[in-house]
Length: 160
Image (cartoon, rainbow, N blue to C red; front, side, top):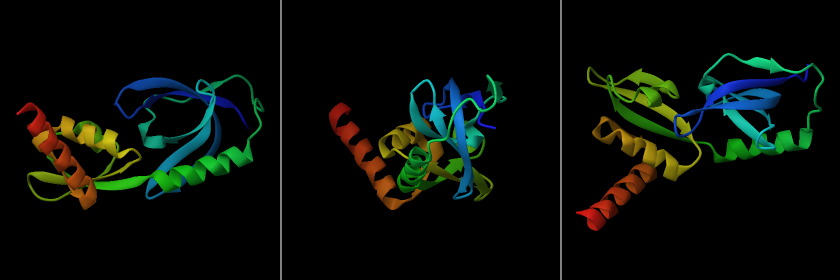
């Protein structure tokens, strides 16, 4: 149909923003559905996790409003696949609802759940985990956990 759509999208900082997209493809990778398309406001290809769409989807304008740029689509698809990493977190029950909402949740025991989350930027992801203090523990990858511990040790050195 090639009809432009708009929706509210939950960004990496857990805020929502209205996005206007020329939708090119829906794909499933590592258990998550993704929308790939051209973001009209940013004038660039973007990949959106479908479960982070925070509103109903509205059509904008008429059908056949754009042509699909196959080269840009394939480039974005491969770039996103290559950059997407996965983390496994232990999350205290009743805590970190926003992390739970963007991950796959399974029970560890009466006090903790395991949450598997895809992320692209390690530094931003570590900041997000730090927000929840002792209610979230990185189980894997070990390198991510070591990076978090290193940052905490550096903060203690700098600020006591």
